Image (spheres, rainbow, N blue to C red):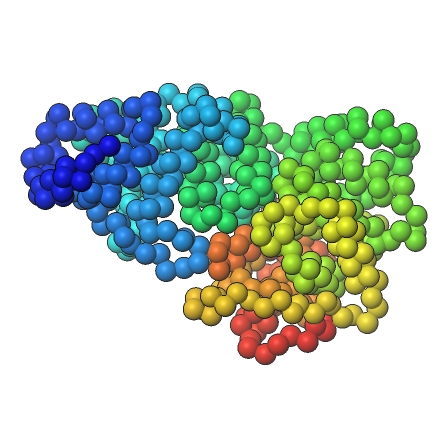
Length: 507
């Protein structure tokens, strides 16, 4: 350890760390050697920060020391978050922690230079609070620092690229349809090669885990892993030869059929069912899920409808699947019921078949972020959902759970943005608002009032902030393009989400 007397001397003589000290080749070499040590890196950086040495040697880091982030998403000051991130990266490097994140630990072993990742972690939020895009400003700081410390042009630019793009992978995984080959190919084009992907994946996982103790869950881990593996396949295939929709659908169907052939199901029945579902279904579901759905649907009797299936501890979380006749109120009723039962919805996939039925999948976790446990809890969810869906008086479950008391200190007016999706013939709706019980139910009621059909959804909750993406059409499955219709939907969403009165639960 370091004695108290030595610590006092260090504190009293920090003024010696001036421009001459920072430009000294020996000091620069020693700092880089610290990042190349086999152990103790995170511990020593934390100690340097505690004694003020890190802020003195790296003045831009000094600007974020003790800097608060006034939201319910970040629970640490910027410097604490940064050093927690470096600690998370270090755990990927150590064999004794390999069981925590096996894929991350395996990926870390393939990195050419670990210090590049540590530098990216150190600089990723270093420009917070300066105004402007902190990713862009931080990338400039990182590039200058790396070149000043003797890194090659390639290594320095790699660090700067990671800082500039440190939010891209998380945003793509949580806000876009990563089952779409075109989304994967666009992300692969942005990443460029496997080395950049490996570094970015590890940085993204460590960043999310260092932001908030409750933010990381199996759902986010699964999304990032799925995006990483799909991008790896795209890079191996070659960016000039992206996988086509038809090829992806054919491959998915073949894999699902292999599973179903062991269940003694009729090939003709399977084919008839799949023809009614449309191509989009096979782009958004895995072969395992498709086989699970087909077996249950083909074995179901009319009295079993609505058919509700629940699988606990799936890779992404707990999967709730609903197969029933299509109704406009379905999304609002389902989300309000799940919400009232204390479940957090992390993803929603809506498929309307050509035979008048709909296939809805919701990925849910308990409010604490844990997977649903126990047969009794699963039966309770299934029974309650079925009861509400069979209810004919068009009343949704009343969401009586109270919002967290802290939310009133972080007011966030609802923002609504529309973007055309011409390729898929739908409209993309982004809603940014304060998270609260009954949020998705209110969105569903607004859709009903405005005659909007939901095709897909990406649900992302960041602390007190909900950033949800909805892929919508009109009742004839056409994109919504008229300004008057968009304005009406925007006004209705803001009215439902920002109003002060209590919702009575009627649709």
